[in-house]
Length: 421
Image (tube, rainbow, N blue to C red; front, top):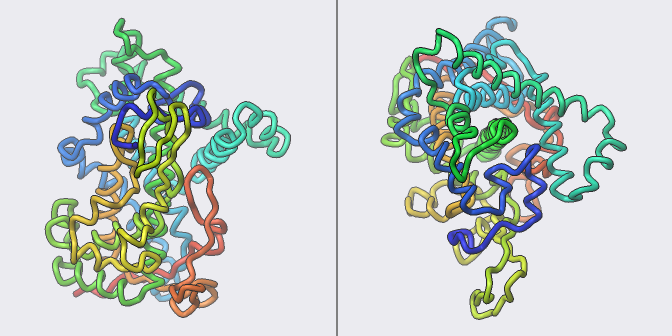
């Protein structure tokens, strides 16, 4: 179903539109394919390798600088308790904005959560729109009257970035053409082709990419750390792997993590499997003539959906699927191909390469440089078990994607600088 372009997206995806249809919401396979192609090079491994240093400076290096400064301000410079989700959000916003707009806004360095809050409010609105359709706007206006200003402010923020780019391209300073997603969209603006984009299309696609990247990657980082700390044996094994492979002062690159840190990679894929932040159904429309699926005839026009959580927890595909067992990917590395985290087929997530790279680089260096501990007053610890005998995971809420329900309470961790070795 997902691997075929004949199964068009269901009209329910209209709820994901940003001002107008974007590549994630359009039912036109041709439009989606054309826009995918415009950003494929931006998120290709070859292009991401070229800008790895810039991304590291505004990503993990900026995060560690913030943590070091916070620790150094504490008594005896020993440890500090932080909300790691808010830090991950600011870091990822800076990284994704570099790929979309060609610049980082240093949210992490300046502790700027305001724009992040605007983006989060917009995601809440999209969730309501996805469920309620055309009545979402008046419903939202009635029950969250202050939200409209946040949404307008976020639109203004992204539109200002686009206007700055237009002014740059018209100036004498424009000696080198940017290679980010925004530039690809601008080149398609009114280009006279069948897939020409309007100025509204450009704004909508850039906004959608920024929103989707910021939310999904930061939430995944949050759950990887959460699951590791709930499973101390896993955490210690991952720490031992990276500290035995690299010196304390070395910054681990993506390629080095791929070559030398299979267990950390397995931890990331296990989190993507057991708690993918996009664990929901992906509805499609059965094409003309109907189709047989596992012996059952489904008539044309019917809605069928692939449930990602169901695929990632299917007992015939995964042994003991409710347990966090990274070792399953060590025993069978090809099992990573069976993890449904970025969808599948021609409509899969265009930023999946960036997501995997960011996760690997972050955790490879984070576990090397710092020690982490669950606060004593946390409600969720390794010895607090659910009905299946596994560590109880903090509650989640679906805000288009799955994220912690009480982040201020549950996404807290004690950080110490690791002893040099």
